[in-house]
Image 1: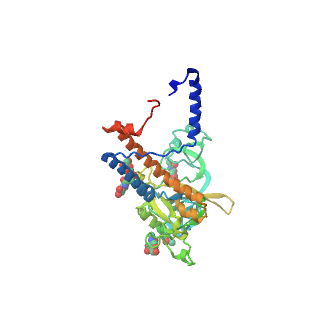
Image 2 (image 1 turned 30 degrees about the vertical axis):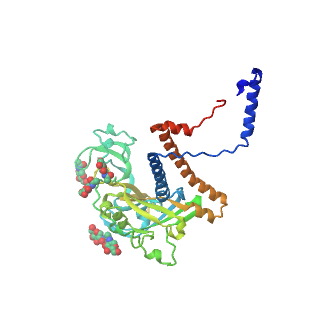
Image 3 (image 1 turned 120 degrees about the vertical axis):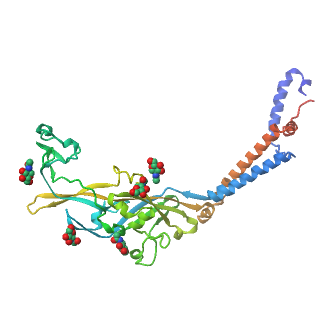
Length: 409
Ligand SMILES: *[C@@H]1O[C@H](CO)[C@@H](O)[C@H](O)[C@H]1NC(C)=O
Ligand SMILES: *[C@@H]1O[C@H](CO)[C@@H](O)[C@H](O)[C@H]1NC(C)=O
Ligand SMILES: *[C@@H]1O[C@H](CO)[C@@H](O)[C@H](O)[C@H]1NC(C)=O
Ligand SMILES: *[C@@H]1O[C@H](CO)[C@@H](O)[C@H](O)[C@H]1NC(C)=O
Ligand SMILES: *[C@@H]1O[C@H](CO)[C@@H](O)[C@H](O)[C@H]1NC(C)=O
């Protein structure tokens, strides 16, 4: 149209038209134009995509992943334990000993990780003095006194050399004389579990958890009006699943092992406390589940790394004021208590319960619909591509979809 105008005017006219266009576009109403593509294959494809999206949303997002619920996995937890039971032992070295929890639980302050002594080897009446180093210590072997220079610290040994080599004979072993706690520990193998009734000991596990996001807190101790409940109950998966008192023998049995098998050389057991609570069901429906597992399974038949032991001492003073000690090499079962879990809450109920504004509720609906809108757009986009570029009559569809108008023709 502009060709009919004189040359100088053309630029100005174009600019004016542009501005006019911008201005009138302000008052245009735009509406969407729908083109119905009558193509069965593409139609079926579109419905299939829609169906799978809806199926995904309902089946996976809502039912399986509980997308309508909000979760809090940042668990804060504290564990306190208390072991009860007594045992009596009678060995040639120590005579008759009575063992209470303060003797056989290490450390005694009720940690989440505790060791219970089931077997021990005692070397009583050790005093500081001179004696031969153990032949099991390689660095302590000697031929001459020069091998045992005075004041040398024996590597992986029991003391300081005195400068004398005790020659190999009927009474001696061919090792350096040392200054240390004498007599040194004899080598002996554990003969069997000595705290025989250790499987009847009980462990009371108190666990407090908090989930800060929903300010929810709970303990694993069942809230009951029965004052003597904790005195009588024992944990049992079927009959008494909420009792926090466990018999050691039951714990190892549930982990798949016999307590007496572990009691001689020691072992390690994991107790996991799992919280998985749906807070919509109510406070009283939130209970932990316990799982037991042996953690040192694959080393149990390997003689070098078999079991678990450590040494500790008890110190005494004689009437003359001289100190002496008893050295204990102890074997036992280590219990590790691990806590994990999460709580869930339904978003919509939670919002209405906490008197949320409609804005909050809307946001969630939009959030859920976002997924639908987004994926259905994807479906339409995919079908459009098929229509436009992949099928035979694509060109005619393309022409209709992108209609153009020309000026002046
Ligand atoms: C401890 O064992 C010894 C023998 O090893 C025995 O003579 C003694 O009576 C036992 N003591 C108890 C209280 O069983
Ligand atoms: C071994 O000890 C016994 C007594 O304890 C002693 O009579 C004997 O002479 C000692 N033998 C040697 C080679 O030192
Ligand atoms: C454990 O206690 C039961 C009875 O409560 C008893 O029959 C059993 O012999 C005890 N086990 C051991 C190893 O003492
Ligand atoms: C123990 O280790 C062996 C390989 O050394 C492995 O094949 C086996 O599955 C392990 N057993 C367990 C219970 O982990
Ligand atoms: C260890 O030995 C016992 C028999 O002594 C056997 O039943 C068990 O399967 C063995 N365990 C492993 C991990 O090899």
